[in-house]
Amino acid sequence: TSFLVLFLSQLDQELSIEANKWTVSLPTDRLCVWSGTSAILSCKYDYPYGYGIRRVMWFRHTAEGKREYVFHTDLSVVSPSFMGRTRYSGTYKTCTLQISSVRSTDGGEYYFRFETDRLGGQWTSTDAITLSVTDAPRQTTVVISPQGAIMEGSSVTLTCSSNADPAVESYSWFKDQAGWSLPDSFKPQLQLWSTRPSDRGEYYCVARNSLGSQKSPPVLLNITRVNTAVLIDPPGDVMEGSSATLICSSSANPPVMKYTWFVIAATQSLERGSTQNLTFLNVRAHHGGQYYCRVWNKYGHETSAALTLAVLCELNLPDVSQQEVFSLYKKPTKSAVLCKTSISPSDAPRNTSVSAWPSSEIEAGSSVTLICNSSANPAVENYTWFRINDADSRETRSGPSYTIIGITHREGGQYYCEARNKLGAHSSPVLTVRVRGR
Image (tube, rainbow, N blue to C red; front, side, top):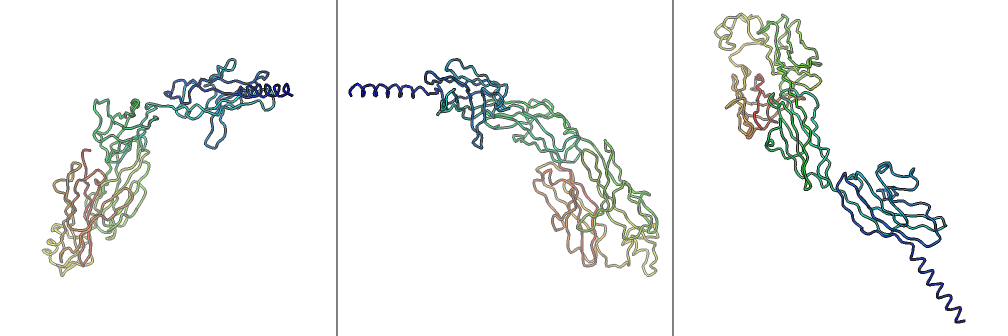
């Protein structure tokens, strides 16, 4: 009996020793490398005597919890992102893996597993090696939006992109290889409002994080000068019943692909045509007004200043003296007046105009006051200000003057006012406010 007890005790010890031989040893549980370098995952493993190794593999888990094989004896199951970048240098009971050209996406927890030629003879490491990848900024580029040449007066955005881990902490923008960065340009986007020919040049950015910095290749920003304007043929005022043609003239390069005409009607701009010329074969009084055109080529669009089409009617009012006509319309040399149904000492607003103080060209951050002037009897009761934007005209403010404090490039553009009394309303020609500087 004592012999049997001794035999069972020794057998139990041997089985215990054999069980302890199923091991995977990882000398380190954390590894941090630079992007683009190699990562070596050191490893040893053991198994009982008499077993033969059939398969070995390294894997990590995806976000869905599935195994992504980094290395496998069966190469057909290896993840495409690791194919050709791993080298298994395992000899007898060693399982070291080398990952070359490490990418920021390679970070994660890596496990080793081996399988033998016997049923149930396999083992997976209970611990993992956590791989972290750090990276100074790289693949830094600049993208211009919209792409291609930018029309003078339009806006453009330059965006700096860079791959980095940790993330990019700061950006700097430069132009034409200057040794100093552009002012107030420490964001990933550089916004240029109301571009000018002087904005043309090569731009590049520098991205920085705690590990280093990288300069992007330069990109060329091309500013196209268009000079779009409205012309009238024949020039000057137009007699009712005659013909007149408004011409949208543009020096765009490449040539204009599309034209659109607008007429300013009180609080909005109405579309009036889509050809280069807008022709009136039999001009009537209601055709009078302020017209402007917008042109497009493949790089963008530009809007002209407004032109006033003044329609004259034959003077056929015997009860009105020439002196009254002169005082009302200031046209003593013509036997025609601006078309109206009647002439009276009482009149709706006319000769409405806009002026700017100190100037219509103003430095960014300064203040400018727009002043609306109009002749009317009785006096003007209400002034309304409008600004023409890319889509339509829109109301901005009321009052005989409109002051913009600390003007920005966004507030530059074309403005006009409407003067109104109880007899009617009249809109001024458009005044363009240009904002200089940054």
